[in-house]
Length: 417
Image: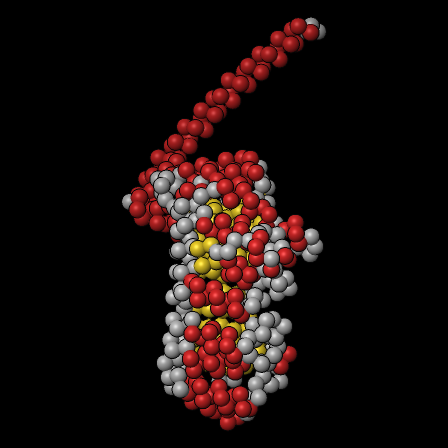
């Protein structure tokens, strides 16, 4: 029977032999991969194409929101063969956009850094969902100067704080979504100053979307907040829905001046009409598209406010209004829009209560006088599903539509015209 030293020696010899064979297998696998690459270079039509064409094919395979998933493009191209990997690495535009969930493994952030480094000097797009923790904020900061699009879906408005120390010289599009919390609003809120400061850190910003913006409830104490911030290049501002908290959404307009603004969406107008008109007057912007909700529980519009409102909107071409369950604003906003906005081409009225006959008659008269209008949409809520305008009113509206105006009258999914 063999002794213990003999057995230990035999084990060492076997381990050494196994290592030699493993090294030989790895070398054979490497050689096999190279031969397969050579064969692929001969047989694969993609590798025989000019780089410009093969790169375009790869680009068309990208998902709308590329992630660091090795099973999706562009990372999957790196795993096919050396030729495909070389094509991918030689195509910087494959690596300009990435989305990731935070918190994540440190390896994923390293992968994102390598990803963007492959984009060379091209503008970059980054989407982060979850928590903007220290590591995620660090990723944003490292690429801030090259970011053209930044999309953040955050758990709290206070997570914006790390961004306030950054400069986004190339940023043209910013989207920030913060889900509305059920409690502890103060812990999830941002300040007007922080939001305005972030906008001003991106001097070339063209489009901004704020969804779920919450400000502290003492916003009315103006002396605690800046009197005005000016952003010279912002053309599109969409303030996301916040139907319950009057300290959100449109109140930021009280402190902003946007001279280049062309598109503005305010889902719930809870600031005073005078503040809104002051913003429009102060900005003197070429506003073309306006979307807002005016509710019967919001601030009341006086005749003087209406007069001022229409005077500051001479360039408006598209107007979308949600009038809530009431229609007391119909004459003020809808009819006057048709009569007093000279460049109006598209008017949409949503969630309005059905009209009385005399209001329908006024509407028909106003539409008939606007032959240059391209489209009109009047949709009432489902709670009025049984409502139908009088037959003669529908005939008159049909005649207007036949003269070239695209028209929808009825429920959202049911057109009576």
